[in-house]
Figure 1 (cartoon, rainbow, N blue to C red):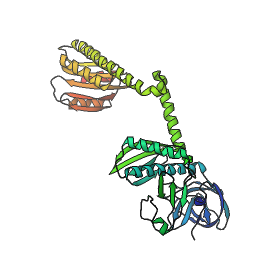
Figure 2 (cartoon, helix red, strand yellow):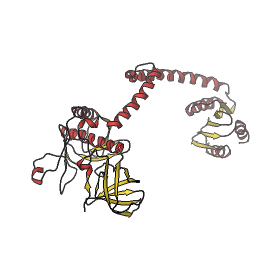
Figure 3 (cartoon, rainbow, N blue to C red):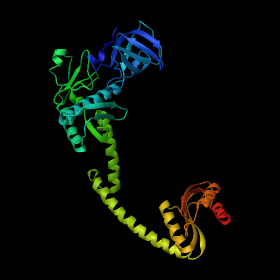
Length: 384
């Protein structure tokens, strides 16, 4: 016997009573059926409801041939009347996400003659796949229209038309449908065959926010947030932007220009620093002119800076220049450069083995890091 589905009659029902029809041990708990239920089973991209049935936890819900199966964490007695309680925060979040997806998908499919070919409601975001190319500007226009529909707050319409009536209805559907078809309509935005739970009025979605639009197969994959998820995300982004604004001494709506200005200033500073570094390297290298092999220690530097110094010294000393940059007792970055470009691989191999290092190179150049004290490095250099 099919389960009476209370979530269709009233998607805002959070508590109900029902009689246990069956209870069997399953793979992940006990599979329980009821004469009626308000727990929505997973389907159509919408996750299952969670909650409690008596003192048992409802871990999952699925439907098979009209019968709804509840996965519980403990055994219950057949014939017992129990009270079911829905995890309302989870259910309402799912209704907001699903309803928001209807609204924006209806708008996009009407405006760009495409189909929604994929829908997934994750724990963090909602992804929707469309089989045509949609630009960011087009997505922003759809977002604007979707929020106008939400703010108009018109009632959502649910209908179960006959087969004859269905022929005259222009509705979206991902697949060929058999049996009774449930049509969900968001006036002004969407008319779609759907078995999910939805809000009663468009305004209960609250907000739709598009996060990204990326090329996917023959179309795009769009990432959106609705309702409370959208508000939490935008609040987090605003808090971060406010912190950035304070650091840059500007108002929150001026951070983009301030960051661009700061990056331009940083670019100038980097160019000047490179000039000074080159001059310092040349001056340091001249001290070792004609001395042959040279070992140098420096305070921590970037790997590129270590390489540039080793290269400058090698050109002056005429031998092997080895530069180690770091702090004694910690980790040193190194660069080895042979002025003649000779094979350096055997030396690097023995260096890494003796000083707990990693790295390599060829054609007279090698770079890496070691975990050794300065005294150990000097001893290796002396006995290499």
